[in-house]
Length: 85
Image (cartoon, rainbow, N blue to C red):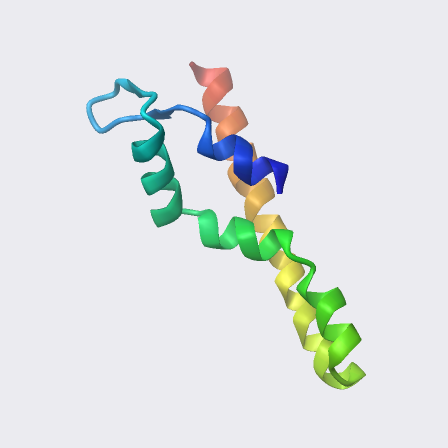
């Protein structure tokens, strides 16, 4: 969850290549982009499902763990871009 808060406060690169520091613009771009994936990968849906659903149904929620893989791939891309710059 801390990661989501940090991303809302991290600058982005605008369309013209300039650094954008305005919080509203950063938040709007993040909400349009990967916020949903980040939120769903943060919530332990498989644990919640196991507490309230039958075991056979709860197993299907383990697939939401793959959303964490998307975040790792995105982090790898960010690190690669940082090393190029």
